[in-house]
Image (cartoon, rainbow, N blue to C red; front, side, top):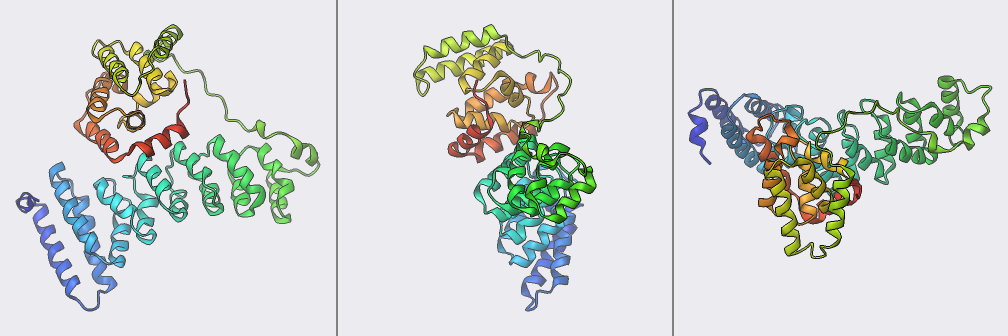
Length: 385
């Protein structure tokens, strides 16, 4: 660890001195008081809030990780609370806290903007439900995480999700919460009070809830005089989102003939795990090098077993997390993943230059993911072509 780099920085050196001095005094004190913890965590916040070069940030992260790994739980909690909302905290520092005991992890799980979709998915699938209950309260939940939270068989998770009025529930999540609300008024009440829940769905809950919630529904929607029985018997199929205006055709979308031709070729290739798979990968990379993007999308879609629409959505993701999932789930190695990511830049960026941090983030996703986890996400979220 090149600490000398930080010691030569006029901005970082005094902060490091304060950090070392304060931590030394704190660790020697018999009574490690809340005031001492607060001072130490304040210095950590200042270190992370200083705008420095990427290499310096890595070194700061190394120092703070070493500190956290030796700290007792009260100090880890204090640090978690102080840095949770900061946008420039190194991801590995936030992830270390996010996987800690729930009392430590809670602040970063709820507020950290550093945690991304894949990070949250890992936590949901590897940690107990109390972690999911905190994640359900985040104000910026992507639709994939909303659906994952709704699929968890836990009333408290459903209650927190239904009460989170800073997100827009997906149609699938709303259907799951509706079923949960029929049995649990702790889910029903926040669901009834949401602005994005269709009136028809709220009316359907009328016969399942107690008197105080019946009054709430009547007050909100004026059901007096309505034919309640008719409302209750209506199908949940009425739940739908407004249809957006048709989007312009994606210039990289392959024709139906291209898709059919690639599918026919794939039927003749049974050895997908050996030589033929390498042949297909080489063909895809060849089309990318020739800038035959539509033909590449067709080949990639058939190879991965997803629709062309899903392929374009994955290839358009800035940091490549969807591409990492597909590659890991289908046994594509790291070198081929890098080639696919770099050569598909034109699809992702519409011709704009890619920053080095983009590739680094994509590789971070790929390297942290194992094949079993990738296959699990693939099965849950990708539609077969």
